[in-house]
Image (cartoon, rainbow, N blue to C red; front, top):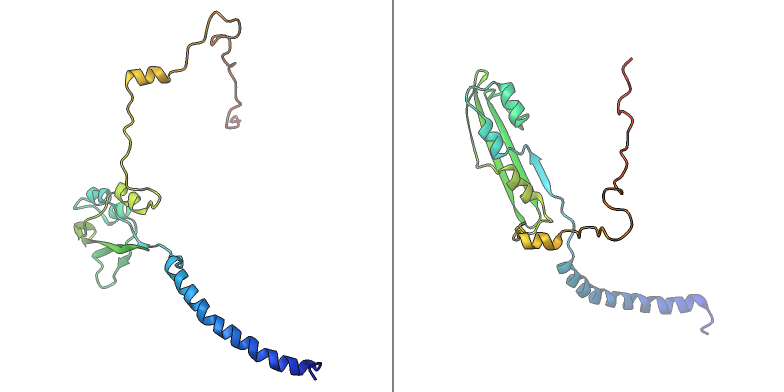
Length: 185
């Protein structure tokens, strides 16, 4: 009576399906626990032109458009309707940190820089520390040594009584290297 395979499959298949559906509820509780510890990777988004405090300090009223472009780079926004105004916008979004945005507007009268205004800019050093996620904010050790510490760390002088090579005889021979460029003909 049970030696017929389709009959056995009809009996076992609903039982296996019921067990797997019951297991989904317990797996749901396990996956919710993992969700708190695992999160997807979020890309840092840096957009626009970073303008440093040093670049803003280099701007002088009366500079030409080319001089301003050499200092600040090409503007992110140059409107057709406002030909005498350039907008430099910079934004940074990273996980765990509130998004940051900075804006600098440069105004021209004809071909000369008339004025500029915008947010307080970071210095280049401040910007690098903002981007460097490896660096922990900690105290930098002082790199000083006393005379006694320097003498203790100095290598011992060679013993002249022992036969063998001394510093004067063991100096490496002078090496001659070929020229880096081919001779001009």
